[in-house]
Length: 205
Image (cartoon, rainbow, N blue to C red; front, side, top):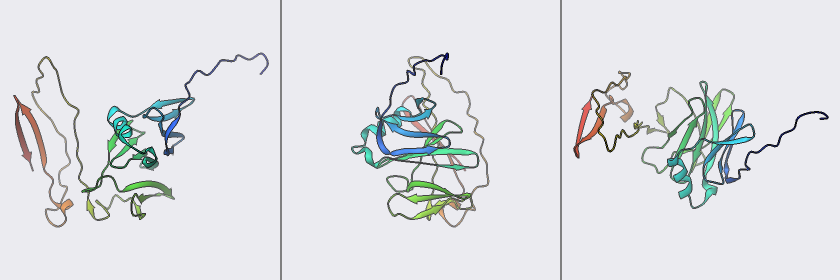
């Protein structure tokens, strides 16, 4: 444009390590970059969204071709799923947080693809090719129970000391019927900690 101001775009070119990891996520694109990180496009920049634990999983994959990415939306949240040969991570764009996914007694999550059909999310099994519809009325994965693990970040104050005077946990009671399938058994809250090298544990129904 005549008389306009021009400036050079200085953003670095980023390649793609795993072609099947590329997925359209909301109005942008996410993928595994050539440096082994997970990137998401933001304008002309490809911002890193993965942490070291996921970066290590990606680096340990002998064949990047097995890494697959897909996305879906549910109740105001947009998700980007990424699966490898023995692991699966899901990124929530709404919260900006990752979490791991897995199928009980399997080496990885059974989901290998996701597609939206009307108002429903259709998920494809990674090994069998079967299709599944997500539902909040079902509390298993194809008849397999769905255990959930919440792990807090390590608390350290080395070389000093750390004092934890109390722990407050908010939980919704009443889940489980007490009979029937494994997911119907009343849940237990378990707490583990270590004091002077001695492992202690407490369980509360």
